[in-house]
Length: 194
Image 1 (tube, rainbow, N blue to C red):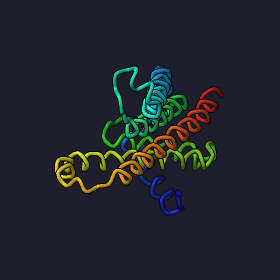
Image 2 (image 1 turned 90 degrees about the vertical axis):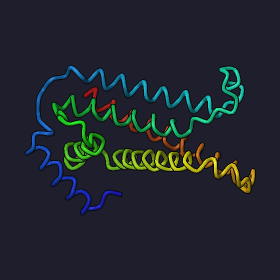
Image 3 (image 1 turned 60 degrees about the horizontal axis):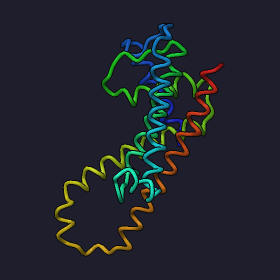
Image 4 (image 1 turned 120 degrees about the horizontal axis):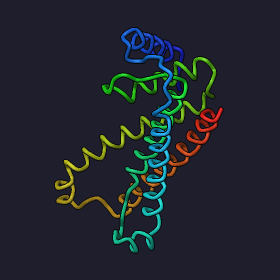
């Protein structure tokens, strides 16, 4: 997934951010628990949304029959990974000093300080990459869908079977994201304990 060219670009970019003091070394553990809690809350949100989405009795009981939260399962799963990564960086005294491009910077810092140094296994990092890309792709697709929804409703030529297959595909992506986030969080939490 991350080839040598991409790794070299991440290394160059991260070293540039270090020179610009957008990534600094500063030992202060005051935000670690904040990020751990945000990660836990994001993961719990993803699990809850998934359960309500797949369980018709549950979504009827809470007053949302036919609820579909798969897109937000994917996003909340990604955010659980993002926040646990922030906690790990903070534990190592690595501070991100900008909000612009924060997601890319956190990913680059994770690669630079943990993957390139061998502190984190390759497959865990790849799970984060895939989740990040899927969340972005699905958000873009969802916004595009909303813009043309009225037109789609007018056409009414989309068959019920195609619609259901779309839901199944979205449910499968949501489940995959939840599983990836679970695995990623478990591994990073182990690193936080050390």
